[in-house]
Each structure stands twice: as structure tokens, then as C-alpha cells.
Image (tube, rainbow, N blue to C red; front, side):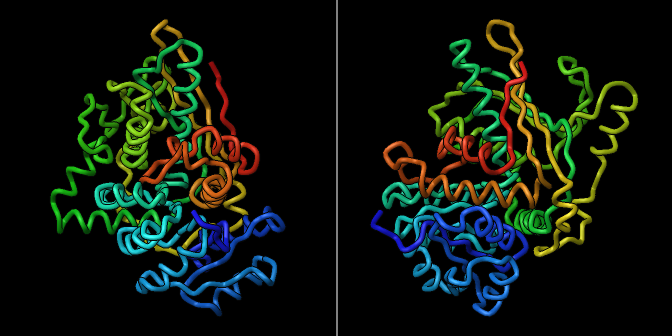
Length: 390
């Protein structure tokens, strides 16, 4: 990549999450980062810049998802475009196309597997040719899950010489509110599935982001189950449908480091006994996502974001019969407070830490694109922990 004017451009900086990203960069990388804020209105960008107390000389770039020329111009000026402008199936494709054309790296917050299926199929070859590294799902969808499995498997390989064939991802504790953007992405995905019935197969297939590979049968995770090995009931986890697909894509891009027969699911731990079963059944019957009136731009207060957290475990039994468990925690509301930090550090990791010889152009998930380098950044700067518990 030739020398670029900026390290990172934040596209969508006037939106709820984009503003949090810009605020994070302004507060933590004031003197050692070349970055800019981008959006449709220069006036609104200036207002946000003042509101978040960013330096007055942070450049403002006018760009619009409906204006290909503005996207091309923006992409050509930076090493990485960080975009929070979703739903991506409505607004993301022109920006991916622009970044691929000029070899610019890209990170997003996508949790839309049908659109991701499109991007993998339509742009992976062009991205390899241009050197653009298109990294999808760099927020709570799916960084802590993708890197949690990666961390556990790295440990298993190091300690036992082989990966864990079966891993359970479980939400141990979590406090946060649903993202308005996530709700709108869900609506748009369902609307597309009505127009294109084949989309339903992509949504159901855990390997839909792994072209030309048919892996072993996976747990559905759609009903409460009792995990004997964990001593707890487990309930369906709404984000499992995207996270599991990303984990399987990571495995494939890592040369099936977790094995061709790797089995993985995600659920929410609800505790033992009748109480745990009742809570699991209540979660399984919850329709709040489908009924939510939240819309992009809605979000929790700073106090609510600061009070949020999450605690995840990833566990499996080694070939030697030893249980190995990794824990991943985050210190803020997962959908906003932690997500804005995770995508920021993902962009900085691509811009500064990941050698192009090791990670050439392509369409990636976070583990094969950045792996240990991103884990180190998240622990050092973004309030996450990655620890082995057993």
C-alpha cells in the first residue's frame, strides 16, 4: 500500500456507535494517530467533533453510501476504513467495493450472515488481488467469541499437541441492552428471506461462510438443554447464529487448525435445578428481538453503558481427558461501550500491527486476520481479559 494520508477514517461518525468510536479515539490516541471523521454532513460532523472534545484539527470528510465517488475518494486516503453504517446489507456493499478497488483495509460491525455470504462470494478474489483486508464482525458480533475459541485452541495445541474437537461457548453473565442497529439488521435479514427463500438455508447452515466445505453436524442450540458436564441448564443465545458461522470461517481460514471435525455451539448458562430450567425456558420463548421497536441511533445512556459487562467461557475436553476452559470478559455494555472499543482496536491493529505477508488481502474474520495481536490490544486498551481457568 502506498503512503496514505490517514491511518483510520471513521465512517458514520455522527451515528450513535460511530460517535462512541470517535470519542474513544479522540480520548486515547490524541497525539499518535492520523485519523478523520466521515459522514454525510460536514455540519453534523463538526458538531460531533466539538461534543466529544476531539481536537479541532481532526479532518472532516463528507461521504455518502449512495455516492460511489465519495466512497472511492475516502477509501483512497486511508489505510483502514472503520464503518458503523448499517444495516450493511443496505449500505455496506458500495463501501466494500470501493475499499477493494484501491486496496484499503476495512472493518465493520456486521452481524448479517446473508450479506456476509454475499461479500465472501463476490469480493474475496478481488480483495486478494488488490491486497485489501476486509474484516467483518469486529464488535460483540463476534470478537470475544471468535478470539475466545482461538485463545482456547491455541492453549490446547500448545499443551496437548492437538486441538479440542468439541467446544462449548457459554455466556456465563451479561448485562447490556439490545443495539438498535442489531434490531434493524434482524428486520432487514428477515425481509430479504421473504423475498429470497434460499436465504433461510444460509441462515440455518453453520458453514454458510465456508464455501465448498461441509463439516460435521452441529448442535442446533434452539432449545434449552442440560449441560451435564457444566452442571447447568443452557438457553438459546440469539447471537449464536452469526458467531458460530464466524468461528467456522476462522477455522477454515486458519487451515482447519481446530480440525475438519470441529463442533461448536453457543448458549446462555442459566443455572442448575428447576430454577435454571425455568429461566432457560423463559429465554427460549422470548420474542423481544422480533417485537422490538428499537431503531438505528437508539442506545443506552453513558451510565447504562458503563454499568454493563459480559463474562463468557469456552470449554472442551482434550484428547487426554482433561477439561480446558478459557474465560473472556468485557468491562462495558457489550453492544455499545465494549463494541466501540473493540472495533477501534481492530482498525488500529490492521493499520499498525499486522504484517501483510502474514495476512494478505482477502475477506476475513478477526482470528485469522489479527489473532494474538488483537488479543494483546484488547487486553491492553479495551477492557477485555482472556484467561485460562483450567
